[in-house]
Every structure is written in structure tokens, then in C-alpha cells.
Image (cartoon, rainbow, N blue to C red; front, side, top):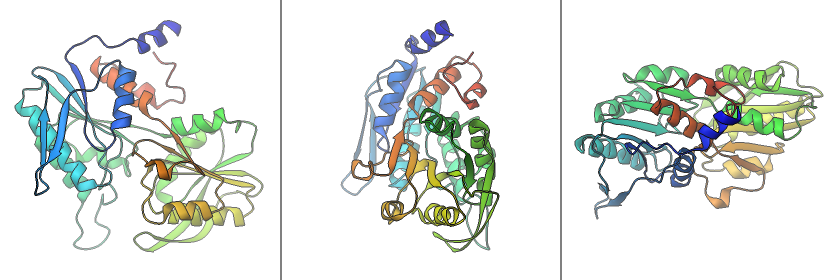
Length: 333
């Protein structure tokens, strides 16, 4: 394994591999490039006076395998347009392959028609990315796994659960009586995956949502009394769901409540709700760049840089990406 780990540390020597970062999450992109052993490609992103986006690629990409790191997080529309314009620029500059690395895929919550005359924006965005000229998408914890099927190009869908589980295991949770809790029925698969890594049972918070961003907790399915509860979700937006679920779990007799998610959207009153809740700690990843004023306190951030860098390495070398779904992805074939 030492030899394999050494290979992972060495830089990829292929001059035709390039990684570019746009505006949404340059710190993560820089860490990914460093893990791969490359410097970020040179690109300038500016705006015309009327707000139109202007992109200039300041180095040759002809015949290159290019990876663009861009989360479609806030401001969602600007970041999405940046991505589409960059793909078009690369296609016209004769890049050999254009690979989109989207740590956070925006517009994913509208993945079906929940009521009449609603759009399916997750599919619309997939169409836009494909039609712009992308060859592959690498993403992390889609809001709904079926979004992979919205693309007509290959999609590598990585999971954040192994990283989040490792954080708890490395912080002496092995000796605690843990229960992994899904805040809704839609997240049961995610909770079950986390529970496998932590060797723990699962519970489900049954809630009804009267309208968007408003959650009403009804009851808890499973046993949480006398246990340390770990809530897991794909994202925390306004923190209404997670804080209400945490309170319900605590009221049901849980000793402590922790929470974790892959995507820290943290909009509106999210921080106040988290700080005022019974949650002891919220573990998030850096798939979305979290402003410095929002970190600290109950928010603990871990990085997905090694996971995504290893995925890029494996895709570039035509090796399997599936081993990254196991718990300890640092010890792989």
C-alpha cells in the first residue's frame, strides 16, 4: 500500500491534463489541483458593464484533457453561466475532452413535477451543460441520485458519507452508542450508507412540509432514546428541517445530537437556527465555499479535495472510480 500511496502523491506528468477554476470555489479548486500535482490553469473571468460575463483562457488547451471546477452555488445563475461560457470557450479552443467538476449541483431540488405546471430544472441544467459541449460530469452527493440519468454523457457521482463518517470515527465516536438519523424519508438511502460505515442502526424523522423551506416534524421512526444521534442530509439550506429534527430527536430521549451534510448552503437564518438549536456540532464539507464569518462555532468543515483529486486521477488514467465509494478511499488499488 505504501507504493500505491506514493503513486498517489506523485504529480501526474501528462502536460495535456489541465485544471481550471472559475469564480464559485477557487480555494477548493486550488487544493484539488495541488493534490493532483498541477497548477491551476490561467483564465480570467470578468464582467462587461452591463453584467455580461467575459472569459479569456490565457493558455493553449488544444488537444488537452480539461477539468473545470465550478459549484453552481450562490450566485447560482452567474456561476452557471460562467460554467456554460467556459465550456463553449474550451470547445472552440479545440480541447480534446471537457470534464465538468461540480462539487455542488444547483437547481437539483426541482428534479420532478411535484405539482402541475412546474419545471424540472435539474434536467434543464443537465441539457444546457451537455449541449454546451461537456464530455463528462464529476459531481458529489446529488440531491436526487436519478439526476445522473438526466445527462446523456458519463456522470461520476461521488458520495460524501465516507468522508463524514471518517470524521466521526476519528473523533472517538467508535465507543458511543450511535444512531444515524435521516431528517426525511428521501434521505434514508444516504443515512443507511452512513450507518454502514459507523456500524450503527438508523432512524427516520417523519415530517410534512406545508410549503417551501417550512418543515413540520411529526414523529420519529426508530429508537433514539439513550443514544448519540447523528443527523445526515445532503444539504443544509435555511436549517429549518435539521433544527426541528434535532429538537424532536432530543425530546425523544437522545443524549446528544450531531448533524452533518455535504453541501453547506446556509442561507437566510441558517446560522442563527443552528446556534440556537440543540445540535452540538454540524460537520460540513467545502463543496460550497463558506464565508469566513459563517465558519467556527458549531460549524466544522472538512475538505473533499483528496476525494475529488483522486477521482480526477482515476478518470484521466482510465481506472475505476468505484473504489472511492468505500470508507477508507486512501487505501485503494
